[in-house]
Length: 334
Ligand code: ATP
Ligand code: LTN
Image (cartoon, rainbow, N blue to C red; front, side, top):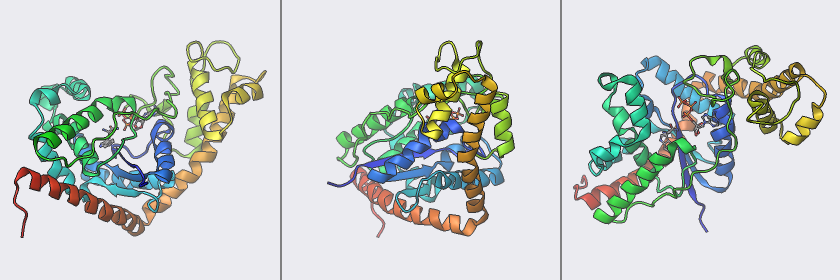
């Protein structure tokens, strides 16, 4: 039986991914590439919805790809590529836009939230069509499923609706991906505000553990992390969100169970525990940071690896796009 195909994407909107991105998403990408035909892309076109200095976008795109590789996304096992290097994404997006209702796109909650925050005058149309480009990302590769978090459920539903609509209106071209949202391995919270998820768009980075932080910076963030009343090291998300978050991080990175960690730290204080978590984190992240910097340093080699990915992606995407164009009555060139 042939392997199931998965596709996922991540935006290069920051210089560094954070621990939540790694433990909640990228770690799963690494697992999935072993048994699946995996396509992973750095979605730089999506990142254009947020105005960014061109030099910075370039740097972030390469840093994102390098971090994925350093975290274990292996260009030899999967197809890793940069979205803008595959023109079919934009081409299919246009086709899908022409079968999407205005109201349908307007109902996307992420668009509603973001445009509400920015106000109509500062909201670009790219933000409105963002989920349709995402649908193109997925449908082009005939993906069977899409490992993303709960916040993306509505976009996957839209993708399914658009794929089904095209198939029934014109021709069965698209595989419809499963609606199944892969359950996140872990939800990591902010070290300063342990009731909120760790997020790239947090107002302060003091509680956001970034993969590219220096060891000193990481240790500092853990040392000043918010803990809870009492002094017992015990997992209790309601009463002890700070300690529970640290236990989750420690367990995910060390492989020890939460129970074992609770036993190990019985009778010890918060200070000792924070320091130990920081050490575990640094031990995992520091080699990843060093490897990322080395990959970015050898730009030619990094670009070569990504080119192998985009060549494979273009092949698959062009085949789907040709079927779509033909189904629509667009005349092939030549
Ligand atoms: P923003 O807050 O600006 O939307 P983000 O930090 O939430 O950004 P995304 O780019 O939305 O990051 O997410 C990339 C992937 O990382 C998604 O699959 C998302 O589910 C996962 N992820 C993000 N934050 C966390 C977290 N704190 N815990 C677990 N998974 C997370
Ligand atoms: N919107 C997604 C990023 C994304 C994506 C995709 C995820 C763009 N295209 C295709 C999966 C498949 C996000 O913000 N996490």
